[in-house]
Length: 457
Ligand SMILES: *[C@@H]1O[C@H](CO)[C@@H](O)[C@H](O)[C@H]1NC(C)=O
Ligand SMILES: *[C@@H]1O[C@H](CO)[C@@H](O)[C@H](O)[C@H]1NC(C)=O
Image (cartoon, rainbow, N blue to C red):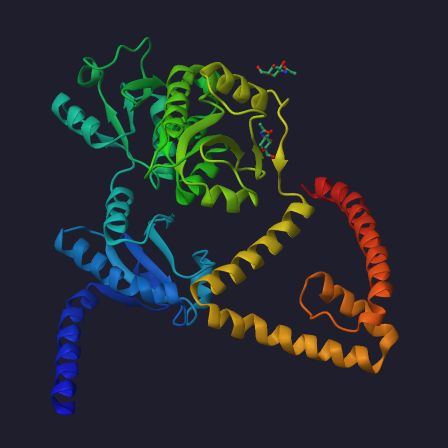
């Protein structure tokens, strides 16, 4: 039995090695000669640390990426570099965390921040390694691309200063989206443009034209327009939206088991996104989120489901309507009050909020350990607390006067057993005094520290 098992294990190991090796052949191990040898090629590099768990998880995916790019005839060469062994080189490339995925193309280095799946990484490599602006030579090609891309940027016209600007923006923002160019004839059936040349984005079943005077710089316009007008939002989308500097208006709803109210709120916010685009598009992104777990942990509170919340991702503030929203007018009014500054802002990134965040994160970590494995939770947190309690008890019984305060601290948290009935009253009085002190100190701290915060910001 044992022998059969052993040979089975060996067999699996051999097969795994055989399967693994073709992948490995397409991923080159890079060392410090890379700086000189790389110049003529486009490289996709995984900067890893041998001890990092996420890097180990990426490794098989990375081998597949190497295989896929090689077999599809891509000119992109795939490599990996132990950033701890060649730390000088890694820091030259601006590597700060592990794994860091970069596409290196001449003087330019593009960071990959998307999901770590083979398809997403290969798509990124193909997009970024190609020309920054791709020409659409025919109507047929244009129609094909419109169908394939939810959001499509097209420069329309001949050579011009605007086209140069467009190329510059494209070579920077190609990490997010494709950029195309076309002649007027190619797009003439789909758009009527007042002026040429023009930069147009096709999305939401319509198209919108860049206006230098109203929209500011082309790059900030592209950054704001590269999302659909209405999105399904998750944590990653929210993080991406942060770079647009827009507020995010979210309908928090139940998707799996939608109530009538959920459906109505979603429809309302979709309609406002579409019908009030002219008013709100520059400042706001619209969408919905399934369930309130993510939002709750973000605002360290609890929002109702369904409800509407507006987030300012730049300063972590959020806004809630003063009463439940039932109509378009109410929603539009709520958004206007946020934009004109008359709505009450909650949260923020001040010192108090940051302290609250640390406590909140610690609590969530402890809760999640307890939830997934109560025994481990007891061991990890219960044992040290038990030891600390015992030590405190030891100190208290040894030097009664100094010890009372410590005990009270623990007692208020409910961490020690009730004992020593005689001293109970004294302690309670001491605790009350203590509480008052604490309260005052906190306020003082806030007063002292807040102005500093503003100065540094
Ligand atoms: C969002 O935060 C930014 C950065 O602090 C701030 O300039 C902007 O006014 C805020 N927007 C609103 C509507 O509060
Ligand atoms: C802000 O907008 C709200 C909603 O439209 C309006 O009621 C309020 O008067 C406005 N406040 C200011 C200061 O403009």
